[in-house]
Amino acid sequence: MLDAAKSQAPMLPQSAQLVVSQSDKLLSVEHTASNASGTQTSKLSYHIDGSPSKNSTTPPGRPPIEFNSTTEWSGRTLVITTNADFNGGFKQVERWTLSPDGKQLTVLGDIAVSGQTATAKMLYDKKP
Image 1 (tube, rainbow, N blue to C red):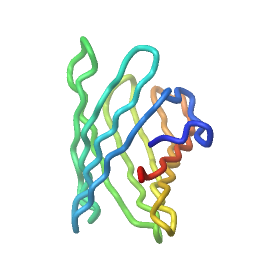
Image 2 (image 1 turned 180 degrees about the vertical axis):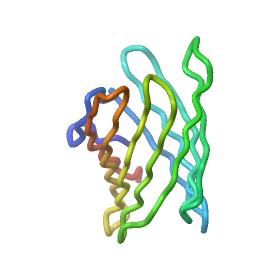
Image 3 (image 1 turned 60 degrees about the vertical axis):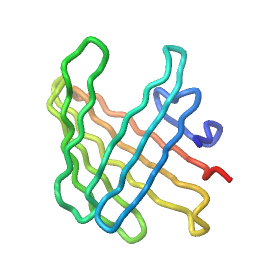
Image 4 (image 1 turned 45 degrees about the vertical axis):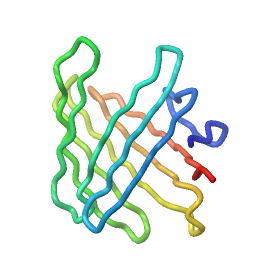
């Protein structure tokens, strides 16, 4: 569950939840976020062995957008780099780090869209 009080982002949702599962080669993520305009859920999969991953989303009233991602490990941090060809270009680099006790996930993100950049820090607490 998102700890909004400890998170910082340009468009911070009112609430958000990540459901994450991992196998030897794949990280599966279901992300649900709610704000004043409603709730949106996305399901993403990443190959954690560094091989390319493809995900897509279909925004309301728009054609699908395909995202191409690669991952790499930097110590205990999983770095996910995602690119897409829309709105003049999209690049996002996320750094996922799990606390030593496994109870908190920190996601640091840098995003560039159409030449505009933003940074986010999202903290998620594991549900008991």
